[in-house]
Length: 94
Image (cartoon, rainbow, N blue to C red; front, top):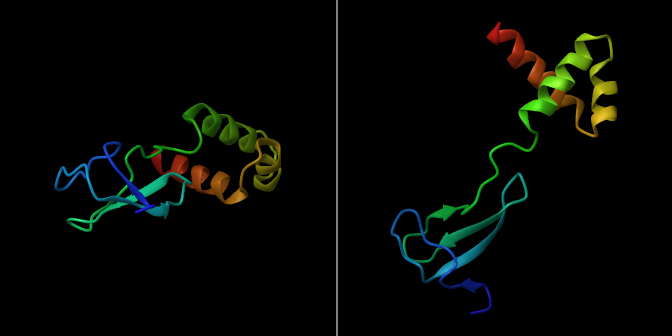
């Protein structure tokens, strides 16, 4: 089969190396696979976070220095929703 990948991936549930089929991409853009034996969908090497902790902290500091959330998003090339979510999360920590 053209979609079958062998000996590259191992199913985390049944440990089978054969019958691993590409299953699209997840939200972060990483390739997802599905085991044909147990029907488990998985990502072999998932991304932990799209942005590093350093970038997050820098965006939060920029926001608190007086730049709007939209402005921070434009400067760092990210969504303003990311900035607002990080600020919300940061306020609940303190």
